[in-house]
Image (tube, rainbow, N blue to C red; front, side, top):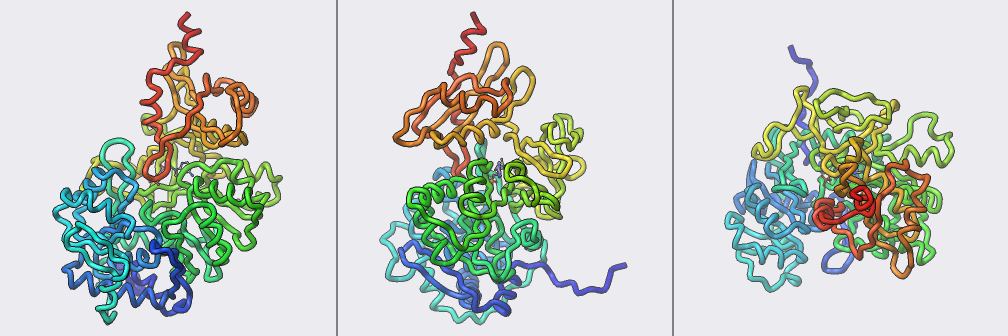
Length: 547
Ligand code: AMP
């Protein structure tokens, strides 16, 4: 027997319909690749997305077709997602920071038929065009006046396509379990793997992310998604902002401190989301110029661990509430967020920061557990580290085309590849990626925790910790640092800074200074490259142990 409620499918395009009817006047402001600031409303975006759907349909796109985007966050990229899903198609976000071979692999693997690109990435596509023979057309997201000279064949101009359609179009209805979007994981080892979101999973993720304990957006907010739409589904903001009618402020290609600061203040942004690197640039810019943030109330930071110093600066010096979030492409991407539970508001500042450095609690619709190597569940005592496993309706069940085989355990939990603790109040803390964990004398050392503490030393700009072979302990931590420009700092000073802040046996056996720490296409520290770089490194303690 079934109940008797309306069976309205959970489709992403209905989010934009809601925005049209209820928030049609609300603005989408974008800094464009062409240099200017562009303004339109949700009503404009709805019309232009429908016009794009007409254009895509005329190009033969329909239900199940994959249309890629390689673009910054702008109104056009926003319209593209809805225009593509509007014909029953699948938006596939390409991360332009990937190597050309990875890009052509992904384009072919996903079977992209059309690519929409910003002007910035035309040279990238020119370089790989011969390797992506199944792409039928490339739409350059600009107007006729800015169309570039290009060797690309079958090139179309986005604004011409919009202008040549009238928008008289009804979204194609698909099943709510039909695919709506696709995003490939950054693939630090092996080929990148595809995650294919359904309409239903994106809508459920939207509802979860909008709850007060998560991002809690409202129609009063002005939202700046600095997280790129080409990475991890832009943390769902292209759906959650229109679902409540928040203003959207798109930073386009400029993510330096000065440009971000300018938009934050001029557009009276109240909420923003980005990875720690972006916030570091903003904080440096504000400190150097003695600036404040009068309107910004709330930032969600994730993608890598948030250093305590960053939390403290935002909250104490700028009065901005930080929510530390953890997620992955495979989770649409939100998995947990560090928002307070009742009583925590009365804690001391330091105690509050102890909670906020953790990656937080799973919201409703995410179930979480930690397990040992045999799959046995470990206690939620805040001490035991284990494989972080998750289950829920917006979490991947299988990679595109079955890559990687069966990825769920017998109870349907996905192994995130992260290692974490869970405390009795439900707060999770990432200690490492499983493959980056340092094993010393049979015990695990958290590289992330040492990195976070070390980066609090004001003479250091960036830190990375890797395990290096040791004759006695198997592996010992090596701290690799980039110092702040123009300062002098010694190994002894760095170690003295750490002394007393971490367990004695976690103290790095050595500190090396480098000019740069390598990063992946999504801005994470490339530990694999560092491990290769330091594969033959002999720790001073190793020499002693060998004597
Ligand atoms: P991606 O799918 O590219 O977003 O990468 C997901 C991975 O980023 C996770 O599995 C974590 O290893 C890492 N990550 C994301 N958020 C955090 C965070 N707040 N703290 C530490 N690591 C994080």
